[in-house]
Image 1: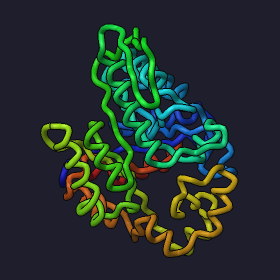
Image 2: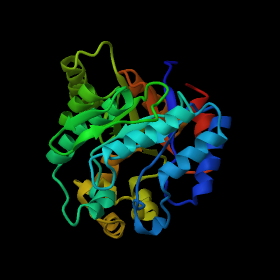
Image 3: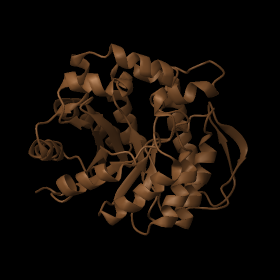
Image 4: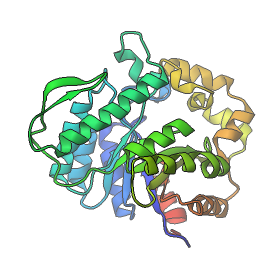
Length: 328
């Protein structure tokens, strides 16, 4: 069987903070190499009820474990909620304390968690992308520069920037991209691409996303293939059963769900999701053999990591360990 890393997405919703720490410990004990945490101020739907501050959880999770790598999937260093210099400082501190065990996922964000910090204004995607790439350039300089420097950007400028506590090593950068344009930017600015499947199914990944990502890497004169991690959504339920039992969490399947302004509306939108949208947003599998074949199909087009969402549920972590991790 082709070798690929199997990651977990523990999220940050629906459970109390300590349970996410316990889940990370359990994931390490179960043999997983990486556990991602979400970085949101609100849960994806209102009745999720909880949403922990991930940077507090990350530090404790790293302290309670010894080998597993952790990081946010994803944080949004575009200003307002997070200035990129603050993200650079937070990541450098964690990497300094736990060298080689911190990963950073970044993206342009969604209105649900970012819009409250923009005084009612939600920047268009182009501006958010420009802010993200500029923020990445600033963070990379903060991590590496040994002397204070001036930075003159369109969105982030100061005559004095310097990070006094440096990371001990490199911080692997994962860039979230759903579309072709973002995938190219991932190739230019990051070490790894992360995306969602089947929102980007096998054919789209092969024909659109990966070529754009590789083009970006070529433009940046990067050698060799970059890492590609997918968040894989699957279910053993029928679309009708998914709609009946999971409607609260399905609002994100709507087109342009990234622009929905709050979790109350996301939950309400879940009632409007169609069977066709469920089919497009979820791999429908009959058994674990289907899941293994699905993973293998993505690995055949050069995916380097596949991430399964379990939340902080130890039962779900154990099930993925027994049925997927044991195979790969």
